[in-house]
Length: 299
Image (tube, rainbow, N blue to C red; front, side, top):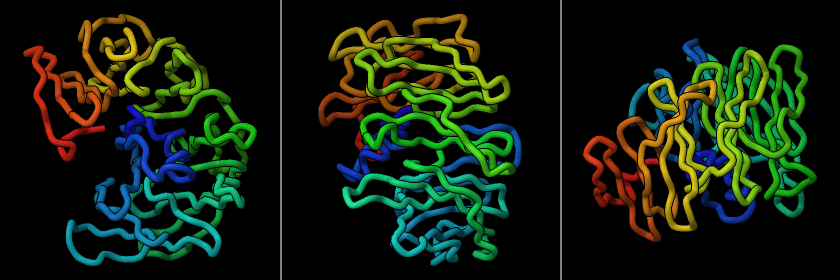
């Protein structure tokens, strides 16, 4: 995860829209083995989710089954609202669920409006709105998980759960945001603490499990090979890479020390990390790092 495009993008995603216009990059989340898939726009770059490529330009969502061509318009933002160019969405292959943001005079998100629309562009319907909400970060069993602002503070965000059937929702965590998904599990990260907490949230039991109180690398957490992989701080310039089970047990140190200013995508085989303006990929098996271009870096 990590925020980095790992939700890293949850709370930073809002800061990007409101302040910097650039954050961590959200990597697509692994979702439950059902027909619904969670994806993320990456501006006008085509991102494949299911059988379609989706992209966003000028507050308009496009879709195509091909990497080339003009594609077709799925939806346009309502007047006075915007579709976040790194925002999350959900699709079952025929319907797209996405959010439109309404901001206040200071440019701070005031509402997230959740819409459903057929990928053909027909039957666009408002199904709910979340006060101080941002984009969809995850989805499970008819429920959307969004980031939202606490007390109108863009540096303080939480996780909001919205039920698609009842059209009701509530805050489930006021200090952490969802940054990754695997089946019914979400990785939730607390970015406002000096030593950030990392949680595993079970959407079925609706319980949080804290598995780390020292997440490092800018909030680096990932699901891989049915486990959780994450970075913990050693000091300001180095981290260790660890793994644990989906229940937070069987913790294991994968890389004892990695000199890194930030950490991107973590898998069971590789760790993407960077120092200043340089990007690297660490091979867990060979225990060697290779310098790579920013284009090849993965968040």
